Image (tube, rainbow, N blue to C red; front, side, top):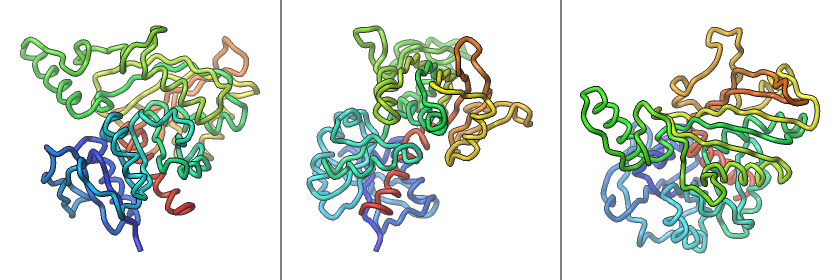
Length: 337
């Protein structure tokens, strides 16, 4: 017997990727139900290359009989429907920020803390971390186990797909207008994104940090350990898919580039690009559609004891969102349901 899976936000870029990932990984689903807003009801979405599914309205959907819900429809939407779905007996794997810091909701990256999934029974909800947090903690986990991470300073270079389809459209339209000297308008971003970078993702907080930067700090602590200090600067860049991060780490114990490479090569979910290879280093354009987190430009930080710097790249729609959610569902069905 397979599972009944509902995908909330099925018409969005992450929802589309969730459907594709479920099919590509041959998830044990007898029935897949795409859900979205009432305005999207009746639309058709692809489930793999062959099957087409009709979208149903989330507003009045009865979750009775649904085993797993994969959700990426915005924090306000999740706050309203997720408890209703859990009450009906489904386990909700939520990709929004709403439940991440709830102490009764596990925040999970399967390669890093799969044991936390057991906590789903408290509320029937499991949270997917922020996309930029996911790829960073995957890269940090084997190093943390080896030498204990003390402090992380990270600058992110995040693609517009992290802000949704409308953001991707805005980059496309602004790029087109740039070349024909048309005037540009910014609807999604605070400033022009085409041929520019914007050091703001999400809203500013009282201390001057953005909420995206705050998320990276508190989520890393919840996933890897409360004693880890994180300083983040999150930047939106004019690429369509793929987040990149320049990561600097200070460890409690000895850590060298050679030790880091050896640890990553043994760790599932990380691919190491050697400087001596033909690629030399990896960029977002090269990893779209890939599942792994890629690290390159690994080098010692000579300014601190046990310091290391590296470049980290991942597909934010896959490992940063849809794939991570499906991997959680795979562990959930294998070990708990």
